[in-house]
Image (tube, rainbow, N blue to C red; front, side):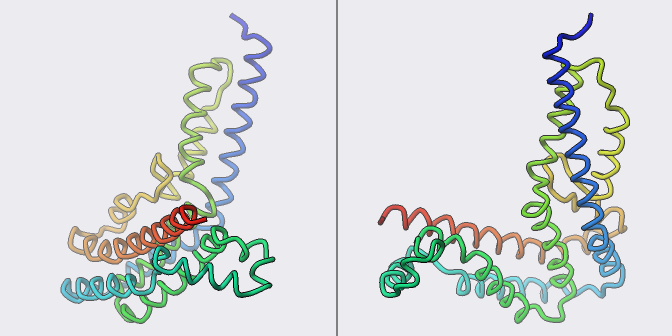
Length: 239
């Protein structure tokens, strides 16, 4: 049975969307492949640390981050006073709005937090490689939006399979799967660390040591996000 003109048009749009998303994955691979290879080379040549060294460093980092990442529920009054005391801040589109100002500080807070890592984990290989890996994770989310794009691609494929029997996307699926494999992408758009470590032949002990560093970076990003989110909500409650 022939598909209606409307159905054909929708299928064409789905197919075009799939093509566009695959092009994005292709561009991302060209941009990120050298970083992935650098991580592989770094891990292959690593001298792994003693577990107690890593645990001590992680505890120090955690304490340092608690000092470096602001609690805007305590500091918002200072932010508001700064805006009210400065004519320029009052008129600036970003800085004059307390909510926008708080959001705009995320980059500088991340830099301060990174300085904590650099000062407390210098020379510790697992934290050095964790920094490289975390920078890739951040690019996946912030730059390439894989956490949005990859689930969308799977949904498009499902829609075409169920709604568009005349649309052959076999070759596109193979191309898409090739990029997901090269980029170590899970269905949710996250980096598949388990597959990555398995391909490098790392045993459980070595993986657990690298994960100490990765968990510290993950905690840092969570604390920064919570700081910004809590600050914005607190500011809203007072304005």
